[in-house]
Image 1 (cartoon, rainbow, N blue to C red):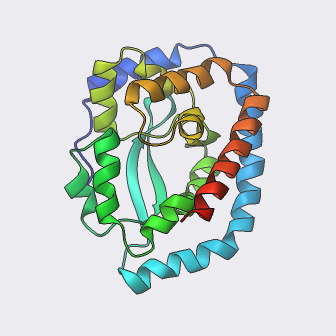
Image 2: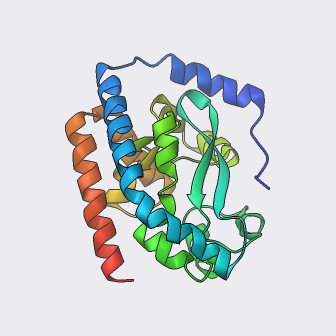
Length: 220
């Protein structure tokens, strides 16, 4: 069960702010790259996706996929997909935690293969479908749960600006600092991407992510 959703008035306020932000030509170019690359990656990843989907069934039962409600571009809600890496019921046990505390407590909830899937980021392969659908981009601020968005937008005045672009499968914050950085530092990286986004930065971030994942995989 997902945490409570933010109130309609809260979401509407930030939807208005995000929709009032100027659209850029580069957003159309990045969307075109998202469609082409996500389709290619989806076709290539089928070979990996099948055994990854079977593994949880053998070790921890159903469901194979994790489905979580997230806030997307312009404040629109969507269902984010991932291969399940945590034991059943972990969402409820971890629901009150955020940031570094969440990272630490999550380690004790991994399924037998969950830690490896997280380290290699193969658990995020289903998000390529989110990218193809237009819910996400390959590069952008990581998608966030509605309740956490409400909390962080109240503490960090610029947090709503993340809604100007589609959330990403990877982003500046993940490439540069990892998962245990403070939310304020992550926001600074996200805002840098939003301000400077370009095809060049998009491709450079994807290459940096591939290199980072490869290094992590070698140390699993």
